[in-house]
Length: 368
Image 1 (cartoon, one colour):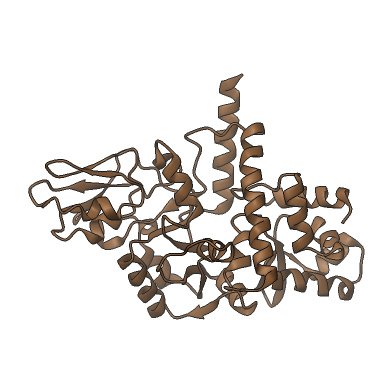
Image 2 (cartoon, helix red, strand yellow; image 1 turned 135 degrees about the vertical axis):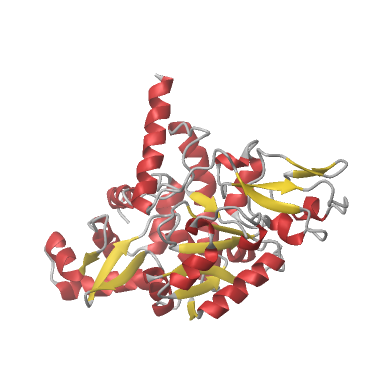
């Protein structure tokens, strides 16, 4: 593929936002050549930021619709372009690298040579990009996170005011459609030949239009609300952390994450203050009189935020408010309480991108 076309495709992918940019490095070029044909790349380069109809895209490209249709459909099947219907018209939207393209490659649970090749290419790019991004973009410690933790509802202290965006049950009850697929991080590690844990394989959910898209393209399967609650219960019993994009109005996806495979949790664990990276806005609180020093919470905490003295001690800088400790505490000595400095998540992905950019701009201005 021509290098100028690869660079143009990187630029258009970056317009979509996301937590991992498309850097113009050899690892990204190799990945794009695996994901796109030349014809698909030519179409993808011209796709606008928002979802667009085939008719509008044909006008942008000055090409007949029947020439473009096979390419956008192929990209949708591959999980690099999302689709949804509006007023009976199919709309197409080029996805960002993360969250988007990366996740959809592995939610099917494929086990072919191509799947393993994609896993190697995506991992090579992710490692290279992290290094390159930090060279050119100083990331402020307190930037608005792309992801947020959603607490396990039953662990929230009785009598506390609970916002709708803290209640997974409200999102599930209001969802028009829900789908579930393989945990992409878990499956990527499997494809790379790494040891995997015994957490449920089918645990990553999509909601609304995303659920319909992933089910129609064979990326995931539609489930009932009852099935969704059963999956959540199973995940909570396994000590998994509920995570989604840092938005409040609706959920596009829900990850149920283990600390052994989740890329986000692994990165948070390396931070001295993980709550800068993602938090539910809650903090675990221990009733010293009830704690029997069994150390179950110490073993279960995904952030290594708990130590044991006369009773369990919570490191406020490391506690991300997931509620895993409270769920598994045998004497029920732990509950989740709101942090005093908790900030409501931005409403939508657009508001989130705006907040993140404002934080970067302020940080850069302060460094001048």
